[in-house]
Length: 470
Image (cartoon, rainbow, N blue to C red):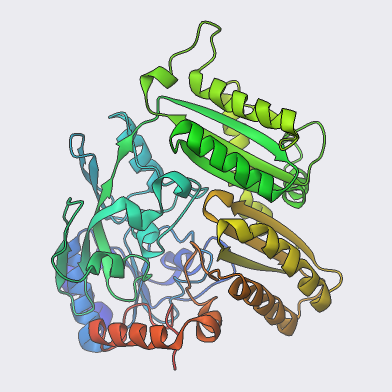
C-alpha cells in the first residue's frame, strides 16, 4: 500500500486532498514560496495526527505542518511532502474565567480567540495584522510577537501548556495551566518557536488577561528616536507599565503607505521624520471613568505627558484619537505594514531585534552600507520600538541575487555589531538558513542538531527548515 492508502485506511480518505484540491495550500501569503505537496492532510483531532505521524515515521515520509500560512520565511514549503494542516483542530474547549486561561486547538484562528475571550471581559493580548487568518499552532511554532509585546510579551510568554505529537506518533501531554512547574527540562518552550521541526502542536493552554476598560491612542511626532524612548519611559512610569503598543513609522513608511493607500489620511498636517503610534490601556475603573469634562483619565494622562514634552521641544506634534473610529484608523496605518513592505519591486525584507537604545544607530550605520551596494536602493522601516524589533525592507534597482545576498549580509553585520539578533518574530523557515549558518554560535547549532536528531531521528518533521545542515 502507498503511504496515502495507509493514511486513508487510518483516518479516512475524506481527510486527504490531492491534485487541484491541494494546490492552494502550496502557496503562502507572500507568494514567494510555492511548492507541490504530495497531499494535504486535514486531521480532525489529535489522535488522527498521531496516526498520520506513525505512518510517516515508519515510511520515512516528510511531514510539513501548516496553520494559516501567513508566515514570511517559507516555513511551510512542502515539495513532495505531506502537508499536515491543523485547520480542523479549531475548537476552543474552555475559557476559564477564574483561572484566566483558554484551552484551544492549534487550528483556532487568532481573531476567533479574541472574540471568545471578549465575551468574558478578557483578552488574549497577542495581536497582529494577520489575526483574521493566523492560527494558534503557527503563532506558537514561530513564537510570534506582534504589537503588544511591550506589555504582555511574545507568544512564548502567553502559553502555559501544550499538547504535541512527536515524530513517531506518540502524544506528549504538557497541557498544564500551571504558572510554575520545575519538573525537569522546559519542553514546552523547546517546542515553541521550533517551527514544527521537533513535534506538531495540536493544542495549547494560553494565558488570558483582564480586558482594558479604556484606551488612549495617539500618533506622535518627535525630533529623534532618543526622544521617542524618553517618551516611552515617561509613559511607562506614569501609567504603571500601561503602554501596550509603541510603534515607529518613519517618514519613508508614511510616504509609501499614503502612496499605496491614497484614501488614508496623513497622520499630521506637516511631515515629520520620526512618527510614533502609542496606545496606553487602563484596566482600573478609576482610569476609565470620564472626568467632569468628559475626558477619560487615561487619555488626560497621555495628553498631559505629551503636552509637557511639547513645551520642552521633545515632542513636535501629537494627535490623540477621540473615538473608536479614529483609533482604528491609527491602527490600520500600522497593520498595513505587510502590504507596504511587500509592494514596490525587487526587495530584501529582514526582521531583526536590537537593544532599545541601538535602533537609531542601526539606521545610521546601515544606510551607507546599502548605498555602497546599490546607490539607487531605497529603504522602508517599521518597528515595534517598545521591544526593539525592526522590520527593514531594502528596495533595489536590479534583480541581482548577489546584490540581494550582499544586502542581507550588510544587515547581519550591523545587527551583530550592535549586539542584536537577525530574527525577532518571523522565525527562520528557509529564508534565514544561510544566516543561521553564518551568524549563529556554532556550539548552539550543534546543540540544536543533537536535539533534532534525538526527537526526530528520521528527520521527517519539516525537513530543511530552521536548523542548517553541517
